Image 1 (cartoon, rainbow, N blue to C red):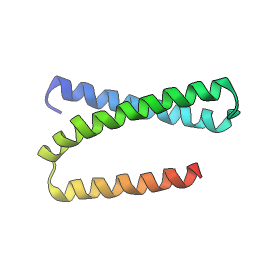
Image 2: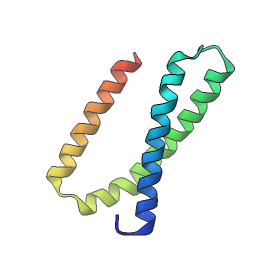
Image 3: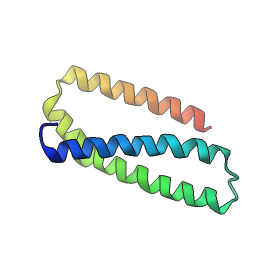
Length: 91
């Protein structure tokens, strides 16, 4: 993260994670038939899709250049474990 653009991308990603952490509990409490739920779900979906696109197209290629294979493998395993945990909670 030596470049200004890389630092900006990183801090934006951190904030996007923070927003998801704030909105998910609100969604879990909301009435799924309400307009509020629909609006929150759409905004969250758009945010997550945007975040994924940035990770896949910008962050991951940069990570591959600066991290060794072992570190990338550990990171991938941690991400997969977290995904599994989140999917279990969502059901």
